[in-house]
Amino acid sequence: MKKVVEERIERMKPLAKEKGFSLKYGEKIENHCVLSGIVIQNLKENICPCVYYEKNWDALSDIELLEKLIQFTKKIPKINIEVIFDKKYFSEHVLPIILGLENEEMIQRAGLVYRKTENFLILFYIEVERNGIIKINPDYLQKMCFTEDEMIKLAFKNLEENLTIETIGDLISEIDKEGDIPRVYVVSTKYRQYGAPVILLSKTYEILSKYLGDKFIILPSSIHECLAIEYDEDWLEEYAEMVKTVNRNEVDEVDKLSDHIYLCDKTGISLLK
Image (cartoon, rainbow, N blue to C red):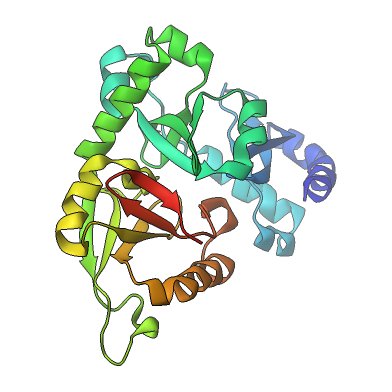
């Protein structure tokens, strides 16, 4: 993808210059994926968003794509820099993200603050606009005058305040055993964005154990939410295969959390299959 995008940028540069814009290649690492994009800058302004390349853009002419990029620059919300560096805002909005262990090398290269557990990597971020985030690196954390331990404590406090648990009956009806549909709960945050870390909260276990028993199964739907279901030894293989199938056919690669299923009990989260 990188070569395709770079070649297209070179073709489009003269067209962009005529309209008062410059183009260059940009990319970001997002959950074991490298996303290629085009950085477009209005030469009269200091705004230069990176628009990540979509496969359907191959069908657009260079002129059509350039116009699409230019329109994107007109829709960028203004970010309040003062808010980003406000300690109170930071303390109330910092939150964790969990990713698979296979992401560790990429995270280290990106220079982000993270913690490693037996099953997941935990990163941290603040939301700056709806659906826009800043991931925390050591320099930013130092400017905010928080230690990593202080930040982590705040992040999980904020996460617990945003915890949501909802019942669901028919989502996995394909594994219905002679009409006996398992009790299933969706666990996430109220905005369903990067909500999977709630499975690490003791409060999540305290609530779900009242309905699912002292131990239950976590099915990772994505980095945004997970499912909790009653423990059934006879169905572990089917649950594991279901997670793999959904990841393969339904979940965007950038949103994938894990191909495994997990046990949740009073000791925490552990790998099942």
